[in-house]
Length: 140
Image (tube, rainbow, N blue to C red; front, top):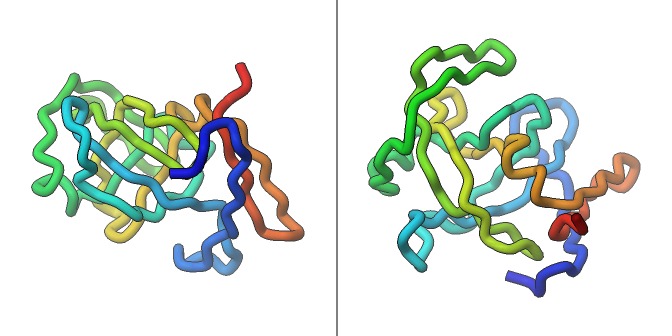
């Protein structure tokens, strides 16, 4: 990963089935008590409407995470009253690893969604005309 507090630029991604490219970046996922990631280079779209970060259900076996807690999760057409919530460390280029809560999400098989619980740690600038996302650690 690049040096921290350095602004890193990512190009929008065209892969999500949307008619327009969207802001996305690659992340690494690591179990809370380990150093080696169980998943590298997972493409993740920014979703400012998502309260939590979500990863594809297919990684549930690979990750071997134990539920941290359960809670109500709601965004778009997704509503679960007792959703298992897990802890995972997420790392993105130019940013320090962050231990955050995630859910597994069945509808997205090939990509993750970065929710507000992870975005709050980052300073991000979207440049629509250039279709780029710049990201660094939050200055706060």
